[in-house]
Image 1 (cartoon, rainbow, N blue to C red):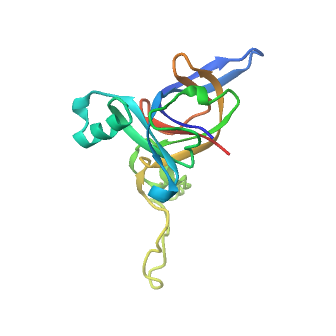
Image 2 (cartoon, one colour):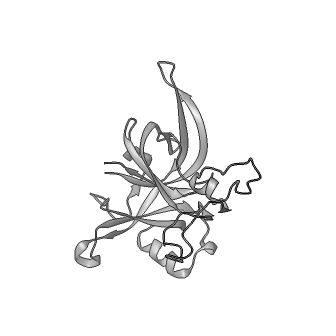
Image 3 (cartoon, rainbow, N blue to C red):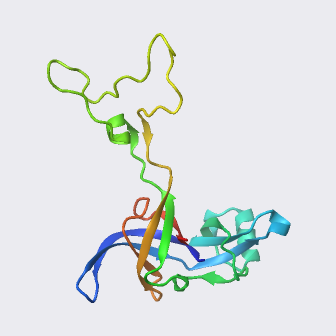
Length: 205
């Protein structure tokens, strides 16, 4: 098992030796210093905490700086824990893209793009209503419940509302190329989030 934090740089394409084109997402992955190890005996669960995104000390609070100094790590913007990924890692060690290899299956988690308040056609892919014979139900959701009984709208009914801006995990992705020198990870397909957003990369299965 392997895990690392990365920044989404964008998408591009690479050509293989056989001439096939691969649509890939470029991730600036690591290096991520290990800042804490959670154990079942002390914390009740097993996890490893990684830091990512070097920054200036003035952007962090004193408790955050003190926590990072204990692990001999410089100031970093993001701290994320990965459950059941500790393995043989120790505090002060650094995780790099060398932990991954081409052809490996991974899953990527991140915050999806926020699209604001949207209707049911865009949010849930509802079909639109008829546009002939004077119908005014063009993009309306239609009936959402009877009036006399139950005289209310059931919970969980799909309707308009906030779209996106939530945690999404994309599974079944494949590592196409690992550039250890530049800390780059090329993953086949699209990953959640906008450009420059921070994502979590873990082995899948």
